[in-house]
Amino acid sequence: MSEDPALGKLLDVLSDEYARDILAATSIKPMSAQQLADECEMSPPTVYRRVDRLQAFGLLEEQTKIRTDNNHYSVYTATLSEVCLELDTGSFEAVVTRTDESFPGERESDTADRFKKMWEDL
Amino acid sequence: MAPMAAVVDWIIIALAIGSTLVGGYVGYQAYRGYRRHDSRTMQALSIGLFFLTAVAFSIAFVGSLLLREGYLALQYQQLLTLITRLFQFLGVLLIAYSLHSRG
Image: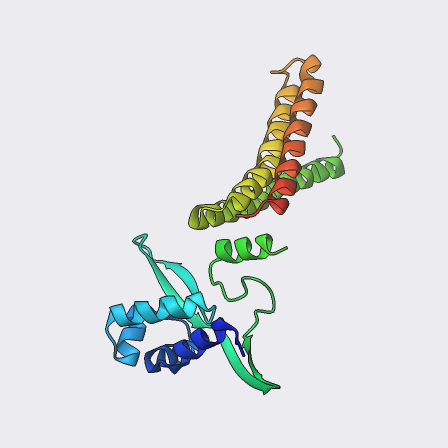
């Protein structure tokens, strides 16, 4: 019996309490890495490691914000909505449901970012 | 010129300038999209939009002013139209290209 190796990795990610905390916090509102570090009481490197893993699985979305002093910083939003694990005749199957934007770029606050996503998604 | 015709003339000019400004704004947002994401698609789109709106219109508008005021001989009218149409064509071509380019 072989199972999809991605399933094990996905369950690994979700078994991590820090990762779940990040998902929970960013499902309420977009947050920067610094905000997450404060909110979830973890060190910034911990945040970045978890964020990278969550992004690799497409569970977290990154948006770039530009401050007036031209410094970029990123805010993160959870895109995970539901993980459904199904056991059927000898194999597990995971179905990941993500929150959908009703149109591409909907969550972008900057016109240029929204424009890019809308246009490139035509 | 009858007052009515003069009013219509002004409306035409206002609409033309409005198109340039709005077209320029859309082109500018596309340009920002290109700069922020280093996206070739958005680069082509922004240049295309600028060509189609701001550039083509400015050439036509300035050209017609020069012709009307007599700074430009009438024989250049066709050349002016040609250049305008060329920029409009390049504009839509770039937008079409951007639709089909990725990244």
